[in-house]
Length: 532
Ligand SMILES: NC(=O)C1=CN([C@@H]2O[C@H](COP(=O)(O)OP(=O)(O)OC[C@H]3O[C@@H](n4cnc5c(N)ncnc54)[C@H](OP(=O)(O)O)[C@@H]3O)[C@@H](O)[C@H]2O)[C@@H](O)CC1
Ligand SMILES: [K+]
Image (cartoon, rainbow, N blue to C red; front, side, top):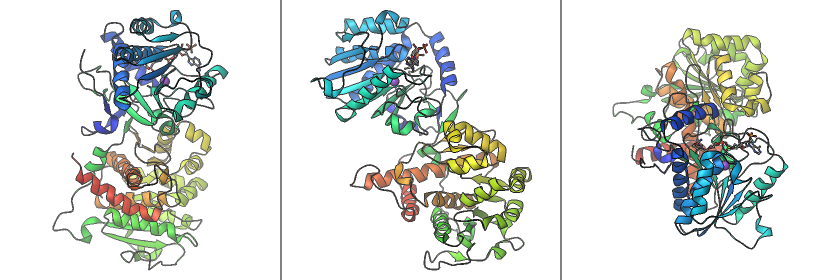
């Protein structure tokens, strides 16, 4: 058997992107792999991969339970159970159904588990819960359902999910391939409940649903094993649904500043926003652009108020100065942060003239409210003027004339539709931010945590996007989504570094937006400090 790769996905990035495959794409690869190997080969590899992973995460575990579903996901669990038992663990497999009803490969795994001394309980009505048994397993494994889970859990399955989740506080709760109850394509819940695993080992392919919407919450730490189905350890890009952001991507967009550089070398960013009472939003975006390395950052506050004390490095100007001939044509413009209704007045000219435009917050709301503005937006691409839109789900819903639930239900598709509708590069924010652009595989971001759900966080992201873009004004249209995805990754990485530095534990408190530019700068420093 070819050697297995058993590494966390975050360690697999030096070569570049990791691909994500939805159910249809995963099934296509699975069919190819099954056709290329003798029966049971893939499940045997899956079982070994799960067993090694479990031993790596819980080397001292002596007592393991596995909840075995009616399909191949259950077969993977049984194949792993055989290895745990052979390694001397006390293992119990609780079967949802009866062994005779399992698919052929899973029956082979069942036979192997029986031979290895796994205790079997068939046709179990409900997995025991911590309050109904004196037995205390060190590890409980969800091998109920994987890729074949396509309908909302019924009452019995909900009971199993609740029982498995009840073990979360007692020991390690691990999921094979996909946490049961989670949609592997969209990261939504198929019903009201899903397994909340400490860690998930995705097999053969990485599924987009693990990383977006509720995916991160339910998958825990995500690991990957490609089951050595090709010469390369990673599944091929062909047929991929999306790419996963990575440290390598972010690093590829950061260049050392040349010795003979000056502020004119790094471009001008103009921040247009900050209507009355919301000047802070514009200041946050401007601070981020500055920290990202823009040459000069000029703020044109819509309120007319100038926050001189906020950052002495910033310059404060009027909108009319930005609109002077030749000024906006050389600038990278970040527009909309705290823009209020006033931003609608400046948008027509910015849409017409700005070569590089980041539109956030109220600029997006103004676009959704005015068909003439959305037409002007979609015409920009034809003039080789590039646009980045950074909506959160509600703003995306307004732009798409839809509702937030619809946007969130299929985040990847929503971002892609919006990109097609606007002819812009779309950054759909939220857990597992999606970056989409017509003609390119979308990105799904894997960094970040709930520390970023705090006011002003999006302003900082928009400002940093402008700041990096101003240093790379010649970014080709086909590379704009790479630039955006790299910044999104950094934004998330800043929150992860803040977690590591905190004594309070994971995501206990938000990372204030005013601290975020510095935290992102530390994330950039960490990029250069680590190996390629
Ligand atoms: N093929 C291979 O060699 C490899 C496969 N691999 C592994 O296989 C997994 C996919 O296997 P799978 O296709 O058998 O699907 P799986 O999720 O186990 O269950 C399907 C069963 O569940 C049932 N069911 C569905 N929904 C239900 C519900 N709500 N409540 C109750 N039952 C429900 C469904 O019934 P049906 O809908 O048909 O009535 C059917 O009987 C994949 O995730 C990975 O772990 C990889 O290791 C690579 C090698
Ligand atoms: K599972």
